[in-house]
Image (cartoon, rainbow, N blue to C red):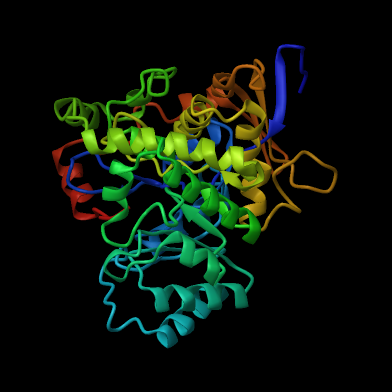
Length: 405
């Protein structure tokens, strides 16, 4: 592999909130482990953590297909099922702390690398953290404000959680209303609010907890910042002609004013977190939702761009998507930097993302576990391949919808 002055060598990207599902019909999401893994890898994402598997059996099949070489894809660090109401069929009454410890131990012994909680009660989350740490696993969670017996990220950090998804939490999100309602109304110019955000940021740092802001997951449902959501690749070209016609017919969607306000607040809070000293505690996660016009594999570049637009320096954003992510999930002795003795997971970019963050889009070569992949060949191999081929095929897809996120 011959590099020139126009090339930039860096570790492979790590998406800590990577979903392998798509929603082509507007009726729910279906797991897709044929094209999605290739799109991740072609974009330089060599490692992923799904952050909750709605269908763990399907996820296992996907991992096995990648491991066997049947399809190309990134490393997938299994999260097992959701812990909380995001799991289909979850019943709070049945999921006692003791039952969670028993089930958690089983998942840990059967290949889970970490757990994801969403829609969970305080005593249940304590049990998840306890059993995960007992088996050397990490825990992340999509939490709330403490409203209606939910868990505020502040309390989860005090329980010992490893990572928090989406928003910082703390006293800036009072338990008198949901987190979304609080975020929407948050006045960051108010001195008391700014103080609360600084205090919560310090709590993360003091306890070594990581923050996965997932900015673009919220910006997607808003009015979409043009610079972030522009196309540099014909993403819809990876759909089958039949699927593309369905997606085209369902667009455009009406932007959410609420998510627009939340997106702007999230950008300011992630910058405040960084300014408080949280550079080493920021990670990259896409949680990339889509009605079919964007795909998760491209989401890491959008998230990096959104972070920089929020005021995070380019080097810090790149660390969030490499070494910080590896540290956050406990694999930094093997991944996250280019060093002797670590896995040979790296990417060759045309340009210099230290100066222009959107240059990360220009991935030319991907190396995973020492195997060299040409990005163009990967992408060309799956064009027109995602989704149903016909109405008959669409019935199968709809029958396998996996609801939840």
